[in-house]
Length: 58
Image: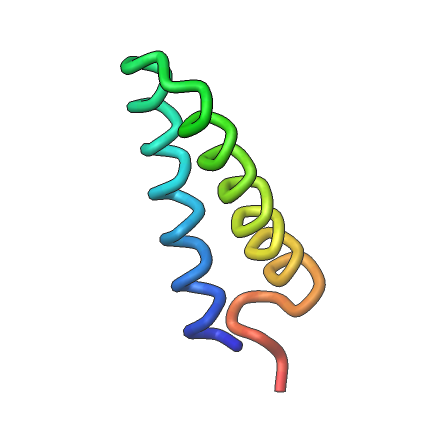
């Protein structure tokens, strides 16, 4: 779960970067998909850190 959390965290960060770029290009569909991806993957990462800790307790 530890490596998966790191990967999901990186996807969340890249979705945030994509959202900023989409705002610059004024692309509404891209903004929507990037925000949804950021909320899903970022929320999962934060929830995993809060409830299991980092590194996760064995």
